[in-house]
Every structure is written in C-alpha cells, then in structure tokens.
Length: 113
Image (tube, rainbow, N blue to C red; front, side, top):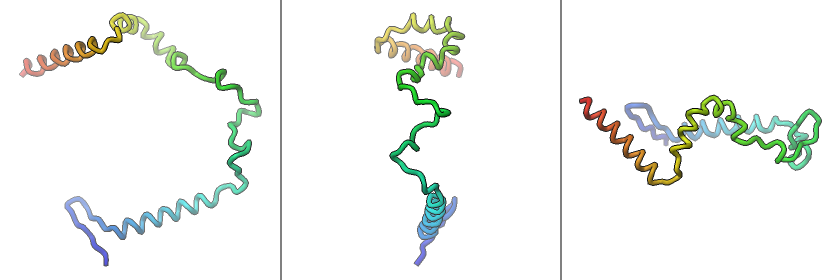
C-alpha cells in the first residue's frame, strides 16, 4: 500500500524515494565495481607521485601561512601597522570596541528615522 502526502509545495511518497535510493546506490556500485582491480591500498601505489623524485621530509615542504599571504600583507602594511598598534589581546577591549561600534550603528539607524 503506497501513501502519498500532498502538500502545497510537492508530494512525499516514501516508497518512491526508497526506490530512487536503491537505484542510485546500484549505479554507484556499478561505477565502483568497474574500478582498477590492480590497486593495492597498503603499497607504494598510495605514495604521492613527484615526477620520480624522492618525497622530501615534511619540514622541508611545509608552507607557512606567512608565506602564503606575504604579498597581501606586504601590500596592506600600513593598515596592519595600525591594527597591530591597537591590538592588545585583552578581551575587555574587544567587547568595548564591539559595544562602541554597535552603539554608533544603532544611533545612525535610529537617528536617521
């Protein structure tokens, strides 16, 4: 017995959704089963290919965040100088800034009406 729930934005039929789930699971299994049978998970096949070169140690290839954003930080050096000057690390200062900027925005919104 099939129950269909009709609503203003569509319908819900659990058996239809279950049939679709089984259908897509079957398609996924067929794609998975056609994979390469010579793959062996715990061998050298899982190592990254670096054009035949030996993989260097992790310390030598680690890219730090400062290296990634160097150009961005260098271009905005003046802006960051001001930010680091007012950055104290004290949570009370951040709460004070939050309340101050929030009250200014609220004043502009209410004062404009």
